[in-house]
Length: 450
Image 1 (cartoon, rainbow, N blue to C red):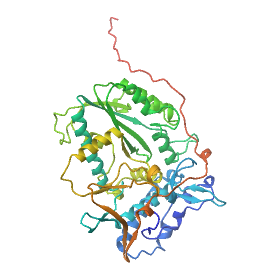
Image 2: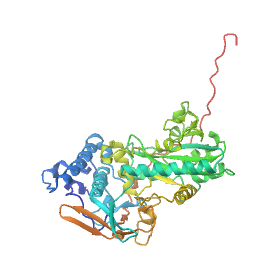
Image 3: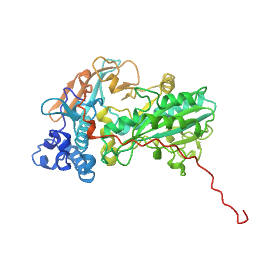
Image 4: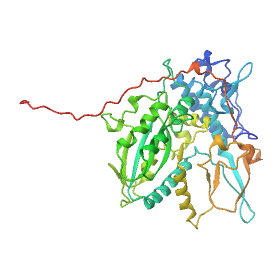
């Protein structure tokens, strides 16, 4: 939520992140720290104070334990769109990005604002009804994803005669050419954009070619590394038997399109199966689909559970998740990156199941099809939430605090994005020279008589 909204509690002075340029960055100066401002903070409500202090403690831990990463600007690219609150005006004009720790502070502050925000609706009978304002980082959003995965699974089993799933993993170097940490938003964009690059052929095109003649759909999942940086899993659902070699062109396409992708992290000839970027499973619909343990070896019985393992810690309250998860989500939030995205065909299958149900309760949920890059503007009719039942209308967004409730027009709550001045020379990518993967060979033991 942005225009017209009041933030929860005062913000720390250090959170303003006032530096003239990136070149003067030092952990002690660029990071968003909170201790200096806590003594002056006056928060009238203890409930607000609790979450504000929890936010400060998380940001302070980031600065203390991962100072070099905390000090990195979230981006240095002028073609990277960022939430306006993740940037700051430079002396003399223009804007630059805030540091990762400052963006984490903004993200957690924004999230706290949802703890007392509501959507106000009019039901079919004309009564006003309120529901908690949803966002994609809340624990219940994981239930939404899982429900969609299960609906997709049921439709796929019904439509496909011989369902197989290939899980592909794409990543990139988190170090720049200078040996420092990369700016996380730029790293994330490099990894994600290989799917459908602006120029040339990417992962999607390679899959389309190699799976020509087969029915297939996909789901993209952006997940975090322990470092706090992101990587991508692609679940490809195919009707018919497939082999690992069918998906090698997709891995090679990522290596071509993603400058920071290294072969050693995408080696489909790696000795350890867990280190390979491709894994293939068949789906056995005879297994109990509600048995969470029904995924055995190369056979999957519960597709939702299998794919859900890659989505992250959605069931846990946000503030209870690990620092790596929170770092990652701050970068996702700053850039408006969709964490889970289904193909159009997959969305059609999911919608078809919903349309077959006549006993739906009215539910307000985040809209996974909302793309901030396309829809976060006053001219768009696509909203970040959806009402799972017709006959309801949205009135306003309500914000409740100790002084009562303020109401805001929904269109005024859209995300405001901006760009920054280019400073890519401060974060040069770390490309790897082209290498040829070495095929796996069977180890042969020679006898004494040979």
